[in-house]
Image 1 (cartoon, rainbow, N blue to C red):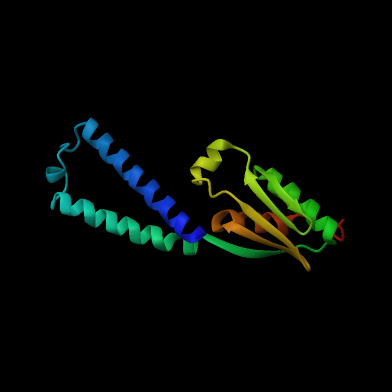
Image 2 (image 1 turned 30 degrees about the vertical axis):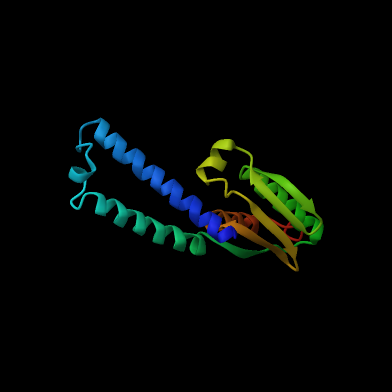
Amino acid sequence: MKYVLRALKYFLSMTVLLAVVLALLAAFHLVEADIDKMFVSGMKSVWQIALVLAVISAIYPKFGYGTRKAHINADEQGIRAAVIRVLSNHGYVTEKDEGKSMTFRKASALSKAAKIWEDRISVEIVAAGAEIEGLTKDVVRLVSALEAIPTQEDE
């Protein structure tokens, strides 16, 4: 169900973005405001564009979300502290904290909107690290930050 909702969100956001771009082009008289003159095939082109956007939207959630493991050389409390510190530094606030399982959301409303409210990061503390799930781009950034910090044994 999450996958379908994500795909729908991406389809709607790309459709709105395309409509805004076309409206701006028409407002500045860079193209004619008539759909039949704006596109070579007129209204048929609109449906073809919608189909392309639907295909991209259906595929993107498969690659845009993922899970990675961060290898952190510390005990459970050290891992928790590192995760909370790194996510806080990256603009996240704790949403839920249930022992070994935590979820975080972006603190900024602007960041949430830019990510189409798909800003949740789930963290599961496992042996020798943490499993992080969320937007692939953010997960890679967070895993790199977690693995780069000095651990208790390094100090």
